Image 1 (spheres, one colour):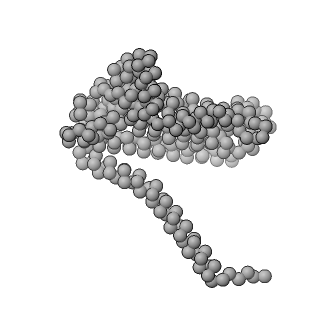
Image 2 (spheres, one colour):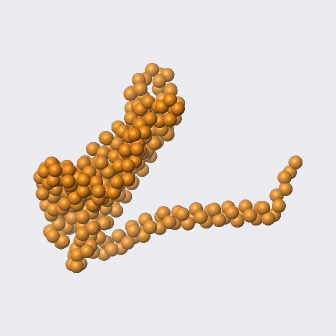
Image 3 (cartoon, one colour):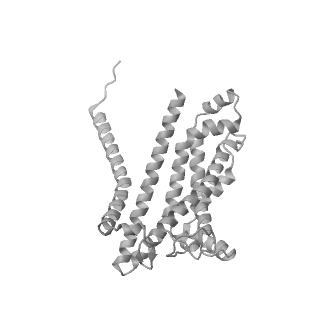
Amino acid sequence: MAVSVRKPDMRRRTIAGLLFRVGTYLALLLVVGPALWVLIGVVVRAVPHWQWSVLTTPTKGTTGGLENAIIGTLILMFGVLIIAGSTGVMAGIYLSELAKPRRNGKPSGGLFRTASDVLSGFPSIVLGYCGYVALVVGLGWGFSLLPALIILSIMVVPYIAKSTESALRQVPNNYREGAAALGMSKGYSLRKVVLRSAIPGIVTGLLLALAIACGETAPLIYTASFTDAIPSASLIHSQGFAYLTYPVFTFYNQPAPEAHYLAYDAALLLVIIVLILLVSSRLIVARTQRHSESQGR
């Protein structure tokens, strides 16, 4: 028996669908618009005055180049990747795979999750001040690399742990059951089966952590200060450490046009670093997915 639909109802559904589609387009514009506005603004201000000597000349006051800041930012990102990456991934693995579930079936580790959520909600300037009091002054390390790495790692560990746990929970249980049926130990199946399937989500979390680390300023001012010297191998007592966000934050407020140009150049370099991270993560995810499909065949 055919069900007739009245024209007013049909018209109402059409209008509702059209409004919903327009709303989604507006939401997309609100997300993409500010990103394009920032990107275009940085490029328009930096490119006309760009000089390649910026990459090979250290900062001299508010003039010179950004060689020391570029090297310092890359060192900070590598250190955060090692410290926070290993800690956050292991924490996510524990929460997803090793923590015993409660009797009601809900995942355990509630205290750890609560602490992680609280830590991720702390303002970065508060963590920087705590690092200044405890590490720079309390332990006498001075403005140097190690206090900055510790504070930045503390900031981003919750994001890595949460993204790792989420990625591991999205792996179908059939993978784990199949590995157990083949006689694999839990650790071996975790390394060879589960983690390989969760790599895209884990890489995304690491990308977010590195993007946060290279874009922070307040905790670095408290723990690393700034210096015009090329970063050394000393972890402590280095009398300051250079990074790209300091020129962006400080030089823009200087009266000299040369300082403004350095601020624009530093902002452009930060945007390029983030884009490189994004493209690298996409390549890793694509290669991992192709590997998984070939293994499945």
